[in-house]
Image 1: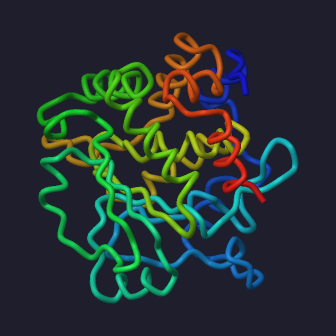
Image 2: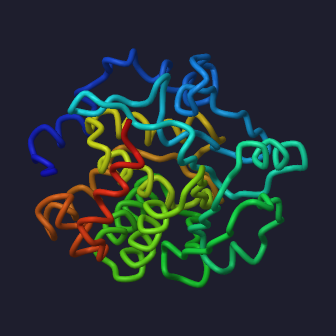
Length: 277
C-alpha cells in the first residue's frame, strides 16, 4: 500500500468531513457497543468496560470498518484502551470474552503502577513503545509547544529504533496469538493510536476512516490543554507527521513494515488475514 501525498494531506487537513459510514457519531456509537447484530463475534456489541478509559474495538463500527477492496475489519479480535486496570466487574466481563493477551505499550515507570486486573486467561506483555524509562512531561507547555512536542513523538514512532522494535514485536504477537487481544497505553503520547492506525492500514481501511477512528480518542476520554497537560487531545496532524515520516523514510507501508519494523512478508499476510473478514 502506497500513501499518496496529495489526497493524504487533503484529508488530514479536514477536507473530508462526512464518511460513507455516516460521520463520527455513527463511529462513536458502534465502537462503544450500540450495535446489535448477529451472533458472530465480529457483529456482537463491543462490551462496555467503564473502568478502563478509551476501551473500544479496533475493528470499529457495525460489521466492521469497510476496506478499500470490499471486505470488512473483523470485530471482537483486537481491542484498544488507555491504562488497563479493570475493576472486578469489568475483569469478569473480560474473562468471559476470553482475552488471550494484554499488550502494555507504556514506559516502565507507568507499568510499575499497574493495578492488576489482567484476566487469568491472558498473557501480560510489556512493550515500551517510547523507549524511555518514564513518559514525557508536558506540564507548562502552551498549545503550540504541546503540538510541536507531539508531532516530534509521532515522527519518532516511525524513525526511532526503540519504537520500531516495540511495534514490530507487537504486530508479530498480534499475528500469531489466537483469541481476542487488548493493546493498552497511557494518556500522554497516544502510543496505542499509532498501533491502531497501523492495523487499520494493514487491513486496507481508507485513510479518512483511519483518521476519524483516531480522533475518537477525544470523545472516549476527558482531554484538555491545561497547566498539567496530563491527557492532551489528539489531533489529525499527529498522524500526518507519522505518515510523512513513513513516506519520507520508507516510501510505502509495506516497506515500513518489512524494513522498518522487521516483519516477514508472511507475518504481514497472516496479520492481514486475522484482521479482515
